[in-house]
Length: 402
Ligand code: ADP
Image (cartoon, rainbow, N blue to C red; front, side, top):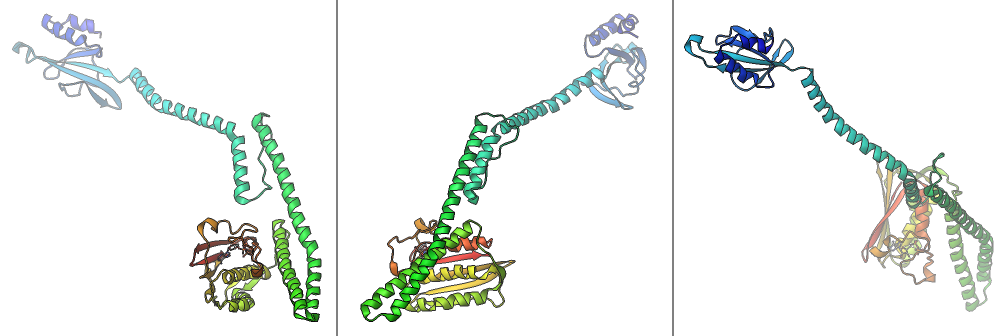
């Protein structure tokens, strides 16, 4: 029944009230009830007829799974009309409203989603565009951190031949050339050291012979100089050869179960004489049965070199100690001295080949600035690491983890 038909049956006053209700746009379905709730006229809605009347704002009612908006207005009337009547407007939450609500929900989900997708798309496009730059940076970092000059910039097979592509190709060619130069230089050092070994051994042997047959002090002195210098050069050449072989990954590495206590004793024994000259005491503390997987002769050179440095840069009547302990499946070896120490400005450079803190070359101490770089290379060849802590005037501690 339409609203117009309803109003025809109403009195003038009732119609005025009805007009008032009808003017409310949102209620198309309107019906009128007695004050007791009995239906009089209007759009009869079976679902909401039993919903109690309640004056106030439009409210939402849920009946048998359907949603309605119900608005009740109490109209006061003269006593003959038995206390007035109720006007009820009902609107189902129809598809239009649902559509509106869905639209809001869709907007709430879609807008951020679109924004997210746009951002992701932008990120992907930018990342793709910058991938060659990233590859260049990645390779540069790998080369500088891992010191591996064999690394090359990755060039994607079907990449556009733009400026970045050409830059990557050019840099790779440059790296090829640098790698070749380094290889040639290492080969030269290795060949030169190898070639020098035989003549040096001959000079040393001849010097020792001259020392034996020397007739007077002068001849003895000359022969001794030849012997000392040949030993010095021989040591230098052996170290250079060892470093070149490790660099070229040609160094033989005979890994074995090595008793660290025995190895440290051998190293200390070989240094006793040198220590005695400066009245330096040598201490060892290696628990019995400390076994490491190592190349015995290489590890012996490394530890001997650290003890030798401890004595060389130690104070008269000082001490050098070598201790070891197990840290899980790793072994820690610590060599400490209470010698001159190394200042902060030099500490990072001591591993550099031929670097000496005090650059005044003292022929007598047999130094060549290769000892620590050799030690480091040996430890790294074992997959270990070596670090140093030092305090100028107080002493130095080298810590090896194997
Ligand atoms: P060198 O043959 O000159 O001793 P190394 O490579 O063994 O060469 O050492 C490099 C430099 O590090 C040395 O010149 C020395 O100044 C410093 N150095 C090494 N070990 C010690 C130490 N135990 N105490 C103080 N300085 C040290």
